[in-house]
Length: 277
Length: 255
Image 1 (cartoon, rainbow over the protein chains, first blue to last red):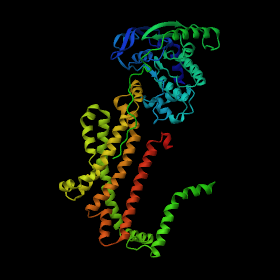
Image 2: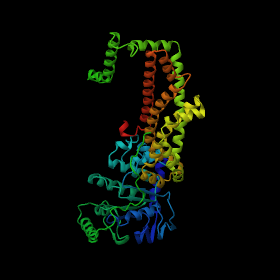
Image 3: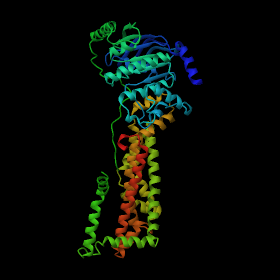
Image 4: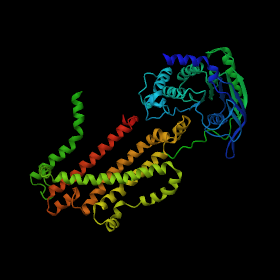
């Protein structure tokens, strides 16, 4: 009773929940390879921004810089006015692969890093993403979409003020994606965090975002506001026109010749060597 | 349905049973000399006599304590060093190449040296077992840690886990299946080395029992000893498997 009262109180203050993000001339290079080149980006508190672009354009790198997983080579990144330095408690990231710990049950995955007293909160968030019945299942028993729901719950239970989504739906089938879009949108509207979604799916970007940003050659080359009312209908003529315009713009640019993979770190280890005696 | 289930439970026992029946028949019809291979009934009788006199329990106990003590010392050391070299680059650089070099020496090749150092004492046997079980546990622990998905570690870092938290929740459970493979190899080796060490020189233990019986041409007692090793080896395997079932119960392969 008391808790639900607190929740609704928080929801009233949604505008204060989100983090502000300012990137100025942000650059990142790995050795001789320049991945981000003086990217400029401003994101308002509570805004939902989608970053699109071809593989290797630097969009995932930008997300990793914002997450504090890596330092920028040059330029400044300010989060809520403060210089960004390393990982933060109020930023959570959701990866393309769910990255659930296979040896922990669903509820324990969500409660990872939380004190024991917060387990009830973990169960509550799982119920919010529609998995309230699967608390004690092993991740191996879940479908791909369910795993991403658990990953989403794991991110949200920390009440982040900035949620980073690194192509979280890339591996899911079309129907599951549409369901996940609705879920993410609803949770974002309820909690008021700032959301940055990296995706290569322009339709997904138009469906979810307040603004769609295109990154080419490591810099922002298009910044399109999506003024469609929510929830957005995919069949809508304005939706389709926006989607086509952005997609055409993406396709204008020739594919990058070097990089099929913008994930430089972490490296994958040599696989499965085992020795007997 | 339940009949076919029963049949399936029984099926693995069919071959051993047939073998024993044939063996019994061959021995009691005089086909095989009792000196070469006494009848299963005679072996069972010898086992019973030895158990009744308390001799068998004493020898099994001594052998088991030796084996487990050696495993604890060697395996424990292998686990700790494997965790160390797997987790810290400096430890890997410092130790791993030396350990890989020593690994290629078969433990049994150390017997002359061990006798010179420790005599034919209890310490010599423990040392041999410890050396033998060290390597499979060390190497599998090391590789288990190296093979933990770096994506999971990165996730743990972004979710605010401390170094110890990362270790406890991600690295150690991730390496566990590999560590258990090492343990199973080690358990197999443990018995091999124990047998050799006990037949070389011992005043007690299953090896001593069989060597002693050989002197007095008690083939039935020798067979009891050999079957005991088989039984203990199987027990160790069952133990390792139950550990796997417990610790790897999240794994679809163990459900």
